[in-house]
Image (cartoon, rainbow, N blue to C red; front, side, top):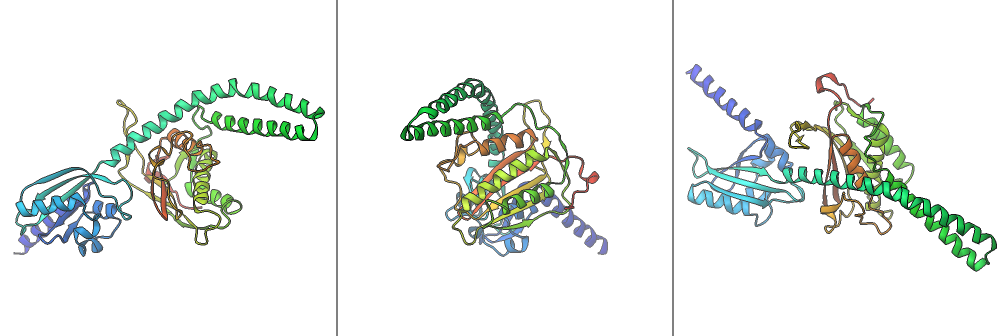
Length: 376
């Protein structure tokens, strides 16, 4: 009997390992709707540990009235396979815009139990958006060069003429000439920002400890625009290095943190920005039909407890001239998307009231075994 028990134990272990190796969330659900087993991907998807999920009913972890619940009920009632496509499973726990295909099948030798497999659709759609962000940034490159040549030169002439007029103008007219100079300078600054969308990739790349970059940015923020905000860090101390431009990455995360601070507002008494890093195996991006997929395991997140991104601009947030700020140019996040794209990475965001998170995924500077990337 001992060899039989050993074989049974080995088979059980192999089955569990196979389930955990699946990248898609998988849940075994009994006839009463209680979750009986989950794999590791399901834990990540629902942001809950296995023990918490096994105590829950499906209706407790999915949105109220979710069509996935109805699919599971149909499969239990008919003991037949039922599929559903493009189903919204967004919750504060799973995040905004989570769309899945759901596959429900009866479990053999289980009393009316079923197996639920979720295939997230938004991953592919996010990849498509990344290519759109890059195309938008490239289109601004040509626009920036045109603006520099066609607008800055005439502006210098306008400013010079205003200064000449100011010398002989009355006090009342002098206020108008100063206004001309100030507005001219403002337009020049805007054009200068447009010029930063160059086709050249960031120079001076080196193997970087991203935690040192984040700590530097945090010190800059705390010394200026984020003095009133509490910072917290959740870092993976074993995170490998990233290959990149230190100055460019500082500008990226300074921009993200500044946006987070402005979203929180100066009047907030409990404003908090959380910086996190993690190693996420399995995220890969293919940027062209003939290109090899690139692994993007380094995850850096900037999370704030502000009011969130307005829904009407969320889909176009990384495009040029899109901004929720009345005085914003709408170039900051477009430039961030371009710099991250130039580094071979992607940027995405999820936004809910009091929980907005920008997630940056970057490639390794070297294979993980060869890097030692703790906080120095």
